[in-house]
Amino acid sequence: MMPRNEGMDHSALNWVKKELDETIRQARLALEAFVENTSDASQLQFCATYLHQARGTLQMVEVDGA
Image (cartoon, helix red, strand yellow):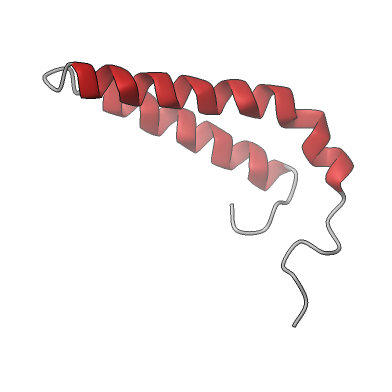
């Protein structure tokens, strides 16, 4: 069986890595903020928005499973 991303061009992923790392960091911070204050549900929406953005970035560079 062939690994899912065996033929993937990793240069495209390297191109967006810095932005992707920052987007995931922002999602983590929003989730942590919600854990600290569960009455602020807007933090969950921020987290979901950041994760949606990260997924879109991965789809743009054609990463399987995104």
